[in-house]
Amino acid sequence: MDWELCRQHLISGCCPVFIALLLYSIILIIVRKKKILAHMALSFVFCFYLVGVLTMTGVWFMRQYAPRIVYMPFADMIRGPVQTVLNFILFIPLGVFLPLLYKEFNRAGRTVLAGFLISLSVEIVQMFGCGTTDINDLITNTAGTWAGYWIYSLLCRFIPKSWLKALRVRGIPGWLELPLYWLGCLAIMITVQPDIFHMLFSANR
Image (tube, rainbow, N blue to C red; front, side):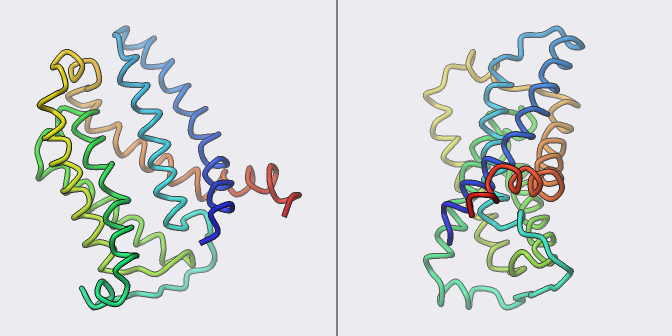
């Protein structure tokens, strides 16, 4: 993997994502008039992570529809244990972020389901020439989300409840923000990010 190239695409993706997130934060402050500074600060870190996931999975490299699908579970895990471990680790933070940001995800089942759906969307997008759609990735990513949730459960014992209350939102905003963040980051990485990358870095390559 070309780590320098990944770094450049990460920067190219974060720039428009952070601008959009800043505008969203201003709108929330004006409309809701509530103290959401801690929640929005963690949201910036979360969106940085989401862009990182999309960068590491090659979503920035879109070509024509050319699906390469692996249907056989577990065989590739044995043949490529390093990749399996990396896929597992990649989704651990998701299992920590979701219950920290949203009261609705303070249950393992909901968090793991969200991890499964996010991983599934990555595998679907990878059909368009930016990787292999692999059922093993879906399994390891979902397992990583589950592990992340239980890490959160352990950390939660040491986090003051007042901190959790400041970080979390609940109700309809909680259900809407996650797909807004994920689909927004995905759309930006596919559309705007390549142009920013070429503007910032293509002259140096």
